[in-house]
Length: 70
Image 1 (cartoon, rainbow, N blue to C red):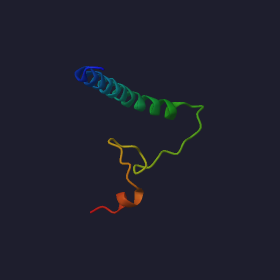
Image 2: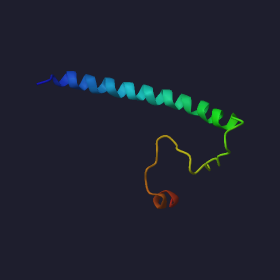
Image 3: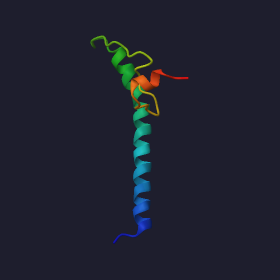
Image 4: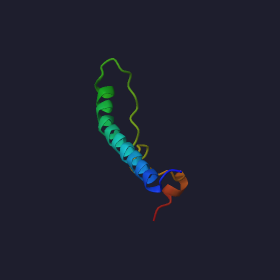
């Protein structure tokens, strides 16, 4: 049987690794957006409206609950 503290430490290290990967991806996203908009041969994509863009933290609630704000 594994030591409880060893398992906890392993999970904490996994969380730290995933957080680092997320930060790296967040840094890359603007570069990829610039690349797709500045490429002369790329087809035009409609840009998502501000309400359709992903925000952090993601709001995964149904759309009808989001629109009925205070």
